[in-house]
Length: 374
Image (cartoon, rainbow, N blue to C red; front, top):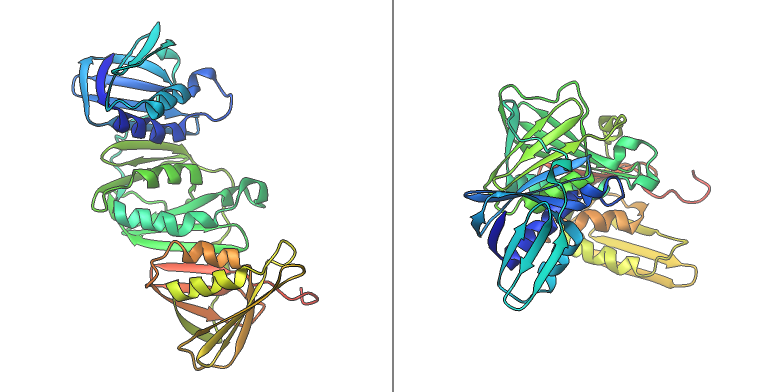
């Protein structure tokens, strides 16, 4: 195979595909990208056996068709460090050459037949959703998934994906907060996840989100028994689903509230960040006091000092006080636009509170209970 390409375009494609390449020493061949060059296109493939991607490289000129393996780390380093706008890539089973105007690199070739196959998207049953909607839904939920080392339930390290009729629901939780986003989709062929609880790995959704660059592009999602396929105009992503059972998120959604507080993301985020300056490792707590026309945020660290921040509030109810880890609020607020209107529903200082936004987004946070009340 031999192609002439724009260096930055090929670099971007290699970096994107490398997300699916093996980070651990599973098999030496998985440290490569597979390039398939046809008469009118070049496709890069990468996989770690759990996640796989087929990615179209744009802006190339095909000199010779064929297939070859490219060492992921070195090809990215070469393309990143080169100053040439255009480069030639020529590779086969014996060697791989990258040539620019003033530099040439030669690397050993490998047997392309050793690289595992990555499935094509040929599904008749799937859901279709605009890329802009899906990207926003992923950004609003994925941060709430549990880190592997902190997960009490294996499935909470991923994001629950529910596709029923014309609805898509994404849910992520780490047991201390829960993010839920809804979007409208178009079903094809009777595709549904009803009766299942498919959980996609965050790595797969991060890769998908990075491919969602055109808001109006239609993305196809198909969920099978143990795997899912996602197709954009440029890429096809395959992923194994996370094993284990996802908790019943409906049981933790607060059913009632005693106070309903209107907020705007920008000013509220600024106040939370200011108050959080005086928290420390021992006391990751900001206390929120919602009173008539005013919100007061206070924090105190054993050695850092204390903070008190006030902001005006369009609230006329009885005073309600509740404490949160400020990180949990900042994580949510920073994925929303500053002028977004939020509603905070609070029951009391010990019951999970819920933030709601435009009927499509809900974020539940467990409050920090004062010592002696747990």
